[in-house]
Amino acid sequence: MLVHRISNSRKAACVNKCIQTESITTMRRWYTTTYGETALSANSIKGWYRSFLENGTVDDLPWSGRPEVSRENVRRIELVLTKTLAYLQEVLREDFRFLAPL
Picture 1 (cartoon, helix red, strand yellow):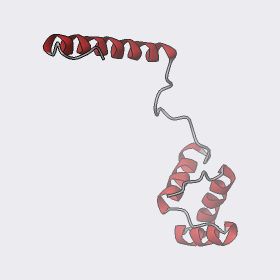
Picture 2 (cartoon, one colour):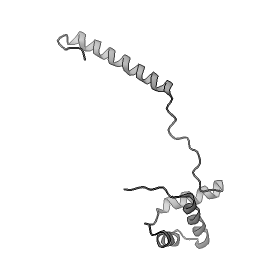
Picture 3 (cartoon, one colour):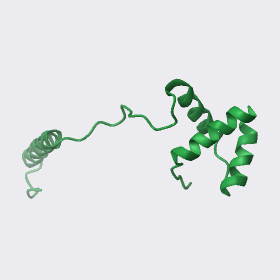
Picture 4 (tube, helix red, strand yellow):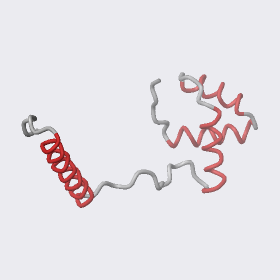
């Protein structure tokens, strides 16, 4: 499925049309006719409408999603993985002396 980003001006136009017509179905038909694209999902439109009512905008607001990756966190993870690998190699050498170093 191809997902493309809808501009905020189109989102606002959709919300405005929903308010005017009081119908998501009518708005979806209008969108397809106006922009020549497949109609949007009703859930997307409801989300934009809810966002407009709650925040006064359809703009994407900052979200708490995935945190930024810091160099320090990467270094700490690499250190843990390196130590884990060294430990596993040692265990294998002791248990299976015939194995060459990994």
